[in-house]
Length: 378
Image (cartoon, rainbow, N blue to C red; front, side, top):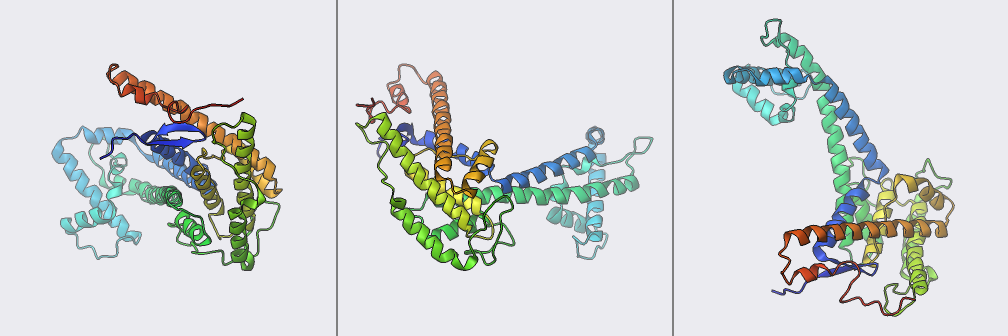
């Protein structure tokens, strides 16, 4: 087994492989939440959480927790029976109820275990502090309405985020972006959507916030092939390695601009084609970041602050404006990565024997002291 230390270079800065993977995972987490669709799903989940929280009685739970073990078990069994009974009324349970305790427990565990941590907040007691079955039955109506809604909201938010991350990881494994692979990426983005359409859009779509009309569905396949062919030829731009040694800062910046200009051009054209029924923005930004990372550049986040400008540049086909926006975001990500990497090294220094020779290896952070020598940067 090789003991050679592995590094990843991003925008001329060098990171250990483990650090790079950690930083990329943090980026992907933030990237998922820049999707308006994902954020709306999480906002809906938060509303459900707030509604549920307001209906929970913490005093009821605390009182229950102080009861003798045998009484808690008795109440728990009755609560399970109530929930199963209500499930039958609401149509969740279709099996005929026989009144057998074992049947109630089986049906509860098969269908309502996600209720378990909440039900004790809805217990009602009479004036003498005794468990009030009737009052509890009525009070659990609130939980029976709110908790399934909360579960649906949670599943939607969780799945949308997971689908986004899965699509990102899939794109990063691709050696080349083809029309077939773009369709696969979009299919993963919409994986959990019951109404998803695999392939290019089957109906024409509109973008409420745009000033242009997306391409007609019948022209999408040919225009996507043309876009990919133009991208393959760099849209006529001259793309050179911005991290090449022995070039000036001015030349390095020019080359980097051209590289980002290529991605901005692709992204604007892709979004204006709007090739899919749903998930066009998520798919386009995944492809853009995949391309940047494959080109050894830091990725970009389109934050709320940038959102209006981002949409404006797409609406007006402003390649220069979007290029500068992407460059700014990428530079910010790189700065964040370097700061986090340095902070991680400082923590590791304090936990490693200062006499350990391997400590020197940890010093090889973003400046690339051994393998990326800065010879001429005037």
